[in-house]
Amino acid sequence: MTTIPQIMKDCRTAMEKSFEASKRELASIRTGKATASLLDTVRVEAYGQQMPLNQVGSVSAPEPRLLTVTPWDKGLVQAIEKALRESDLGLNPQSQAGVIRVPLPSLNEQRRKELVKVVHKLAEEARIGIRHARTAARDQLKKLEKTSEDDQKKAEKELQKLHDDFIGRIDELLKGKEAEIMEV
Image (cartoon, rainbow, N blue to C red; front, side, top):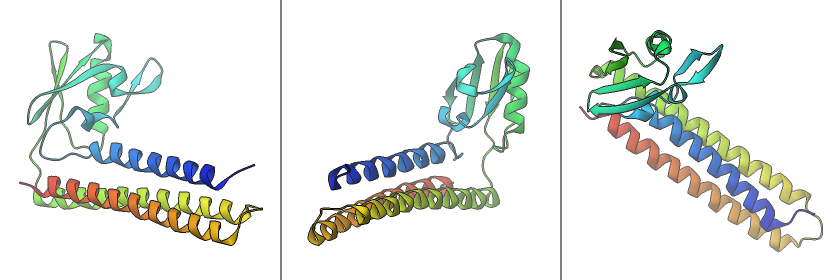
């Protein structure tokens, strides 16, 4: 038998997952600074399957405008280079002595604006995920039997407060990322 606290707990978990996913996605969007998480979305054709880059080599940021990828298997250098070139990050990697150097070009105004649009789209997807969690929880609340109308109203208010809290957190994340991108 489902209870109001159980529904609220499940809803919070779903919203938390949506928020964390959007946080990871936003971290992989390129700004002026080099971060290892920038390459988290890159997938490499290795051992007959697509693998995340961080599972075939280590990524580090020795300088603000440079990333280095050190493959664990030297035979994957070409595959990693190819994956980096074909990613939508606009990178031009060069390998030397088994290490792949990935210089980050500075962002021009047009590219910054494009990235801001991408960031807004990702934030909206997160908001949609949070709204879905709220709707699902609200539907479950309505189906509950043996609960008073007052308890249901109180739970719905809590649900709305939870929703607003997570939307606020996403907006904060968005604002920070947008400022980071537009910073010259």
